[in-house]
Image 1: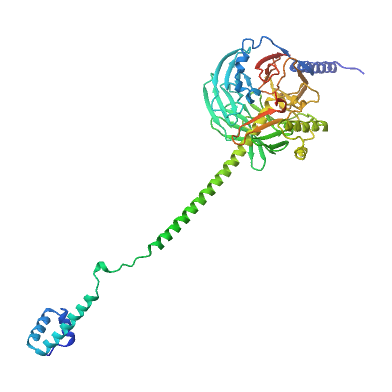
Image 2 (image 1 turned 180 degrees about the horizontal axis):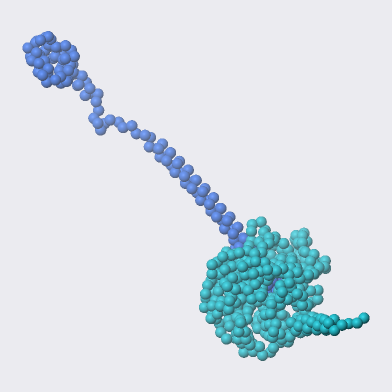
Length: 396
Length: 159
């Protein structure tokens, strides 16, 4: 069979195109499949006195200490950190060195964690605390204090004064409405774009003691929304019991739905038995006979499968990292998806490994810089409950 | 002139006649002995009657007043006041109970909402995959009086 010149040219062009696409894909994917070993940058945050920032005040070694700080990175690389122990908004340079306290965060609900939500339009820093949003100017002066009519579990600033809020609203009769709301911080207008009703007591066991009420919650039977900003001004919405991700415009219009095809991890009976045993051990610790309420404990219905994922990160190049529940221990497995073309092109599945510290993959505890191949994160510098928190930088 | 009849005499004694007629009758009485005798008799009767009336009359301040039984009125008023007070107390108690129920219900809902948020927050700051491997549970301890609650992972107990 003879191949003419035109056919030869077509074959060469096709081969070249396929090779080019493969090379481009390889360049666009900084997350190689398999293990990604994170290396700690020892010079990062070297001049910050982390012990002093974490305080040595014994009275603060309470719940605050388990949620010490959250941070976001500004456009110039500066780090804006909310110190939950000291209730301060603090500024660090791009090398993790403490510069100054920008503001004291006052008017906050007691016993609640104050966290940073993000930066809005490069003009405002938004912090959240139960139903209160502090909106600071970039210099730390307070621009606005917003009291919401509902509580906020997560807040994500988008653009043009619009923020997204994930809220839980409790209704009589053990009902809880989970909503995703878009809010204009200037006009105060709200718009619900996603909502779901669930049962509050699902996966919970409540015990009335003499002086207190104890609720034991099995968190893996709870479903929740996870919000992230994507494509500059759009909202990525994940619901942990659904393998699809949705992207909304800031006006509340559904732009696209990404099917992830993630398979939920099955919960073996042995794990269920371990959880029940854990409840009994806890009851024994607080002085209750482990078998005094055996029937009620046995009636706690644990689901047959885990949620599809437990966290979502969007890196600075709008790649979506969906963090999965895994069978193996001590790994942080992320299914990585790309959001460009809005159809969720699958890139690969990787595992972050960090030998030195326990890495928390939640967005306010970790920030991924795609281009620089680095991760900034807040970690606890030690196993002790009183260990100070610390900002660290990893490269990969 | 004819003699004075009884009616005329009666009107004369009571000064109820026109002056001209009165003078005319007066002139007749002065000149007629029969009529004067009748007049004198009538005058005596009237005087006796007036005297008798005076004996039966009471001075104004001595006329007994009809007084409503004071005790009965007070009792009725007291009953009315008591009923109003009781109704008021009942209404206040009812309002207070309603407010308390609403307040307690709201407080309970706030506490539940707070608990739910704290669990959500714990899940947001915890590496849930690691928590799953450690078979972690989330424990919430709430003081029902103050509503203060603390949330922690089961592994943190006793640390």
